[in-house]
Length: 453
Ligand code: GLU
Image 1: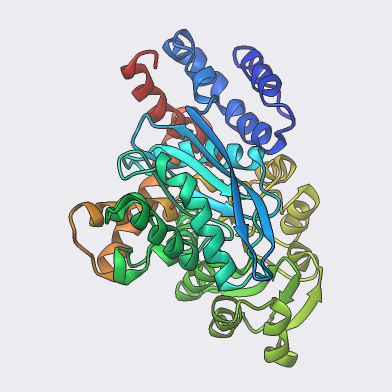
Image 2: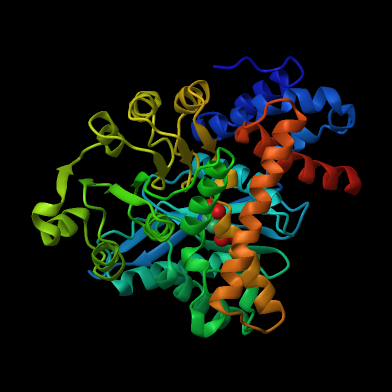
């Protein structure tokens, strides 16, 4: 573990003490703190105004009961969360995650990351995150609808176009956003389009929002490759996950001339030497809500399905040029990173939030692998949410081409901001440092301007 600067160590110790047991939040905070010692010593005004202490304490944390009735008539109880972390740059913005593992520490880590990610986009959005320990897997549409309606019956009083704008994350896609928006509209009697993003195209959604996170992560990886005069052309790629982020990362890699030789879901891994069949994968995952084993079944001999396998171990037996972890936090550890390095990996861009453990990041950095951290590489999703808010505010809707072009400009801008900041601090190519410092500085300067609030 990297030693923290003496200026920030006591502040980090206080974060540990004040937030016991929230290990993912500690991990996310520590990673940012590792970058900030030199910023604080160079700019004492941040320490004088206790910016670091304030930035680690959410402005508001809401926890609520979500009762609902299942298809058998039984009452179920879940816990709902919304952590409104920082509104220095705009309304709180960030997704909702529905997954049985969700607890306050998950939402705090995601909300904390979101503050810096959103700042890096250069757009007027603060940071927040929410969700529930509800498990949508195996639930009927009617059950998901009743859960979403109950969730919104509490959440509606805390959100709004100028206050807090949730969207999707793991377990929350177009279906859930539809039920949530419908209930918000009914309770408030307002057609407030920009209260949620990720809406359907016919009722206030933006083209490219569905594709944006996966496309953005791939564009970020492409930008990193370009710094070494390289490109995706002919590259062999692993993309973990097979949710929304992974599917569209695969699509963009293929458009840029790369070949995706493996993907995964929570039940197993597919190694597909001839290249993943994206249309089939989309049919199985997006339309049938099926498993990767179903994909392998239809694909037959072309793919090698390994139940419960580890996608990164594919790099032990074959060359892998680029890795895009797009599943979930801490899915790629030090040993996985070592396998990828041995397999020849040149670049890693995080489509998920914090998928690489601190050990993995160290292995990549020491091996000179181009490493794009999630708060930079996966910011295309939230950036396109901000474009959706712009379209809603002007009661307009843009073409696919125009919106995709805006996304590309934003991703290149984020890459440039990270690279320039890393240069400024004499660590060229260190995107972790660049992302943390560039994101922090934008939020911190706004907080300084506002005084002690
Ligand atoms: N959940 C996504 C993220 O991690 C998107 C959030 C949004 O669009 O507000 O950034």
